Length: 163
Image 1: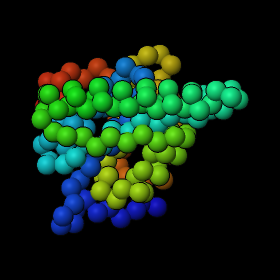
Image 2 (image 1 turned 90 degrees about the vertical axis):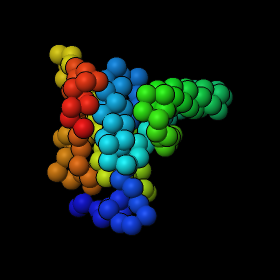
Image 3 (image 1 turned 60 degrees about the horizontal axis):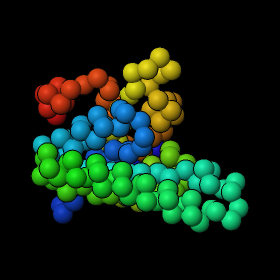
């Protein structure tokens, strides 16, 4: 079921959600989402999801590992935000969540009714487009908002011509 989005109502701005992770293609998703936000007077939202299974098995050091994961997430978000600010002059919203990526993406979309489009980038390796794209594409019919998948090999100029 598609949920009602508020981004078209007075006082609301359309938000483009991009996921920050350690894949090389996420930079292309950020570039596309940022350009779309700039060109439509929208907002770009950057989400970093911390996988809690990385530190659940280590009793006694879980708190330290969680703090380190949070610091890594904040550093990645700050780095991406700095690039957006310097290149486009817009201020992104930064969000850190903990859980399974697809579940946390769904929760954020439901929590923020201004998020209108999820932007992902597909990897170009022989294993496929990447686990996040594969998991979301497989459930696209039931996804609450449109999903834009950007090819990793698009240049900034090509992204500019598409947005």
